[in-house]
Image 1 (cartoon, rainbow, N blue to C red):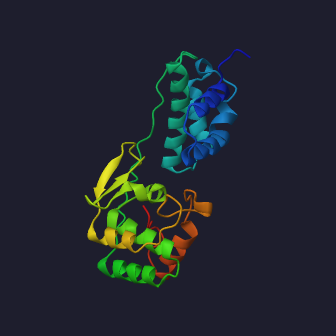
Image 2: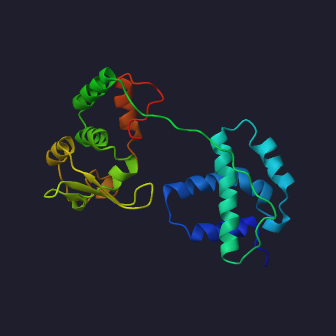
Image 3: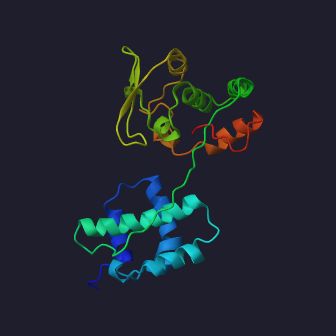
Length: 226
């Protein structure tokens, strides 16, 4: 009972992390790949051979990005325990594979023209304006979901982005296209610009965006809100 196994460290790690969508993804990854091989072990009991076996057996044929995420998550769990003096560090270094997943999300002028025309035809004003604001500002999906009316500085011409992917709040210009979208967007009692159910923060819009992408005949691998 007194052992700080990977399972126990994982529970402590979760309790000290903000409850986000990323944590849910980590939980699924942990249960599928890390728990079966390491959940019952203390870090000191893990051998380099165990890591090699994980890569050869459980992660065989998986995308390099998946391998990277699993190994990095195992490292984070153990580092969490080490920082809190709950366990000793591994006696070896876990090598994380380098993954080149750089992908440029761009469209030809004709594709962009078609996309904008398809967006304009859509009857859902919220989806239409959200996608247009993404195109005009470069804001990520999560940033658009979190955007509140109080984050818009109409007088100085800025949009304040809170809690972006990099972690540090940012300020971006409120250009003419973005200003036009927001000025003509229906405002509800919700503090959010693009609210979800019952005025709460929106969590998804994938179905509507996929329909627009399909109607605009865009490439299958193009991510409109990335």
